[in-house]
Image (cartoon, rainbow, N blue to C red; front, side, top):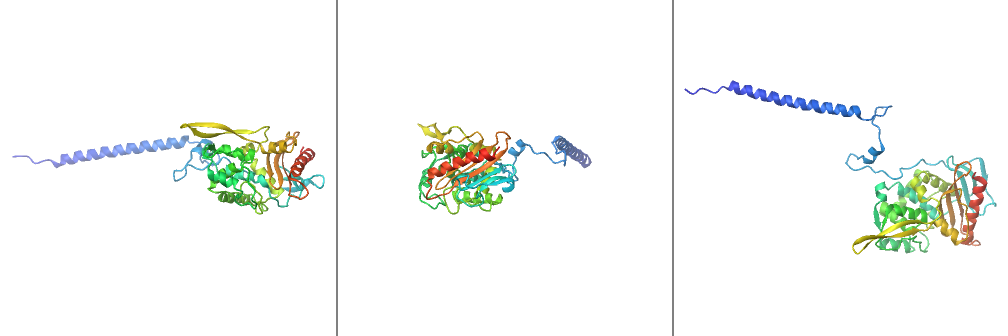
Amino acid sequence: MQRESRPQKKNSIDLEQIAAILLLFFLLFETVLISVTLIRSVAPRNRSNGELESTQSATEDSSNSNGEKDFIPVFSGGVIPQRPYVGSESVSLGDEVLSEYAILIDAESGEILASKNADVRFSPASMTKVMTLIVACENLTAEDLVRRVVYTQEIADYVRSGNYEGTSTSLPVESGGISCIGDEYILGDLLYGIGVASAADCTYMIAKEIAGSEEAFVALMNQKAAEMGLKDTHFDNAVGFDSDNNYTTAGEMAMIMSYAMQSTRISDYLAVRPGDYAIRSYYLKDGAEASYPVTFKNSLNSRLEKYAMKLSTSKLVATKTGYTTESFMVLTAQGLSTGKRYVLVVGERESGDISLTQKFKNTMIDIEKILNTYAK
């Protein structure tokens, strides 16, 4: 007779298999738990509150919750300078200076050392580009600075048309050195074009690259002015062309320059240089990449040569000229004996009995006189 199967034996085997599987899962769980514990125990912690410290490399490689890399600008914003104020050493300038507007401040404290019409609005001309550089550096990353952009016919036509957005005259705008349609330029080099040569084409290329249009970029400039508490400053173009709605004061222009000097990059873009600044333009030749040098002529040196003027640069650290129907300069200086930092704004407005040539000469004369008298 055939024997019946023994289900008890089968049930015994199944229980042993289940027990083995459970033991395996338990061992895996213990392994993971131990690993996590070890990782947490060696992670660097802030000594004061036990939170993880952030390092530069971790910041650069960090990602947000969407897995996208965090935006890290080349200039993350400085401390908003104190509004210039009258102190115990403040002096009111009168006829001893030829310029209509002037202010010299202690860059660290904001104390006014000497001034004339410092709260009167004027058109800052290309001194506008100091704010242009601030907004650009706060909206570009290190990776952006090495990218290339193309100089297009659209940019050339727009800049040279005489209809530069926001302007109130029909005068053409100087290009500044870039001239070959279709050539590529490194984005970071264009910032030197703005700071060194005051190039309008570089300005528009940067504005368009960052914000899509000059109008959108100018909105960022005005937003920054508001953040800085500037009540008598407004922009309607990024290059600084004369307009009723593009204005500031000597005092607020000094604040803008003080803010900009907190960035080592902007300081370098505006640095006083003995000569010109060279970049390269890239293009295709017979299917292969080629390049040639492009020179940005220093705007200050250009003006000094044009008017056969000399200006002692022993104290000067950085400068930005302004030059249209009005002649202005904003600069950072350093005392030779104390090392103290100063910001000076000097300007002359349009006048029927003073030529543009004479206005610029007056500006240079006043810079020397004010620095030699009040900046120690």
